[in-house]
Image (cartoon, rainbow, N blue to C red; front, side, top):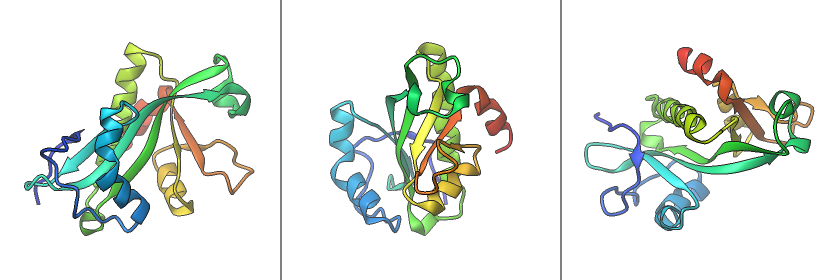
Length: 171
């Protein structure tokens, strides 16, 4: 199978109707809301498409700020009250291509984007709220740390921008 590099969603070009990750909330969001979120500047929707322009993996990115008082020490130390970060709102891979490394390819793209953003406009970390405990462990494979390790119900994770180069070297 041939896949294209991550690119911004083009609602007139990329086919979303057949996307099935196994998570109905993620599938439905891509079909119904991805285009309007992009047009409204609330999320950049990045996709990996196959040769027929069918979306097989997608992620959403937005700028955010994390409150220093609610942040773990490595993120909070030396940071302003509102810590600039890149938010990964969603990431999903079509179940028909699961295991081919497309999720990892998208993470590489996300981390490269965070590195570029940090040069142009400070971005101290990449943050994500995992969908469930399996997704939480999946993000940890890429070096993401829990916001509150002692709270097993909290699914928030972060990766400091300064640690991205090490993570990318290990992928």
